[in-house]
Image 1 (cartoon, rainbow, N blue to C red):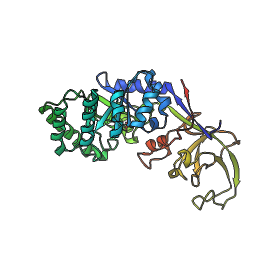
Image 2: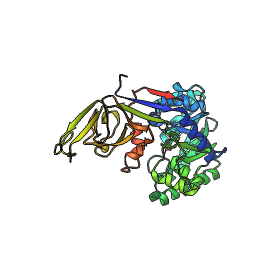
Image 3: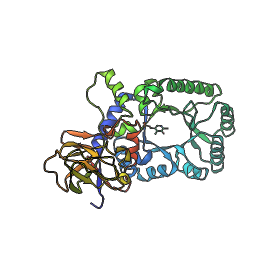
Image 4: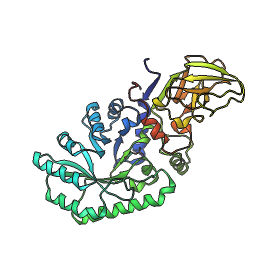
Length: 383
Ligand SMILES: *Cc1c(COP(=O)(O)O)cnc(C)c1O
């Protein structure tokens, strides 16, 4: 296979997730499929056509290079929105391609509008407002200048959106902060209206906000992690499931990641396994080596903690995750041989390894592990 592991993308799982999410949000809420970070590791080139087949016509990315990849991969001329980095040098490309982009500081806004006037193509801008995340977004004391620029360049732009981003809606610990952000956003929106500035759409919700705070849905949601079948955090799922007395997960994961046993070794009680002294064999053990390491995106933080599936059983990682390999404890599994399938993410028999089941160490782990999956492994699409 020329790769030490393989990745599969299940299209029917995506269909399932989109129909679940569309039901949840209702027909009046637009859907933007967030495909930054190589479509959360699923692969932009593979994922975008799948999403288009299921009716998605709006994609959000972080940067201009990702937007370019989406446009190249797409077959049906979707709307592409850059939520982060676009350079002044790239603005002409964006204007000519009809690409939407966030503006969150005056220099970019002015450059975009001036260029739009010069080449006589309307800029599709989304004004991002600072409401408390303290990352990007116009501050209250800049808003008068924003309005002034918009007036000066009337007719050279479409104010496609007004937006903000919440700082951690996946955790109840941030409840007060997120609520404050929502209030601040509404206040700023109202202020703009009073100045005669109205956007085509108002959008603020990511996955977690869309589940926890229905009021934040507004005209469009920007959904990443949920569409791939993962909950933003365990807490978000529990909150959702408890409200509806739900037992099982309505989402399905698209991705599975598999490798093979590379070697088997017997280790005597009292020996350390792998680099250093992090794992001491307490008894005679049988250990399988898997040719996947942190180079391939299997985080070192999963040393002595991660799980894989072999022969339909859940198996612990033992010792440190190496650059290109990891070791697992197969002492109690009969008949494990070189070449046996190892599931790193996905199902085998009745069991499933979800990324988050690796551990509750960090809410961000799902996001981080997915986006670190090697881009160069071909994605097999299954229906
Ligand atoms: C990443 C991102 C999203 C999507 O976040 P999910 O939690 O994956 O749904 C939405 N909006 C912005 C601005 C983002 O950066």
